[in-house]
Length: 77
Image (cartoon, rainbow, N blue to C red; front, top):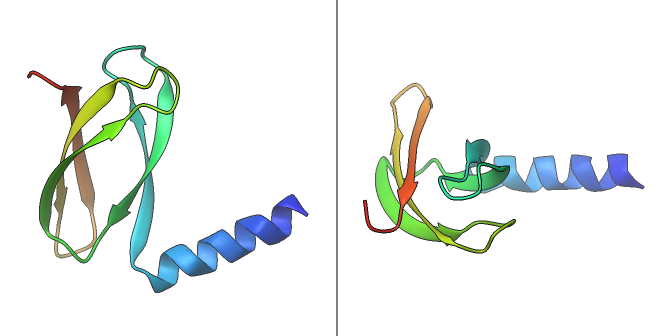
């Protein structure tokens, strides 16, 4: 069951040009997975930590080669 779900999610993320990226929460230090829309070169938004629910300020850059740079900061940084 889990393998089928993983394959399905992988196909969907590839279709939508999404990339999953693991980041470390600047508050609780836990690693969480976020999905990045690689069709947008520069983006910033706030996403809540899946563990401690605090707001993480994300600044994301997607290079021409598809390389993704993520900067995760406290909400007030």
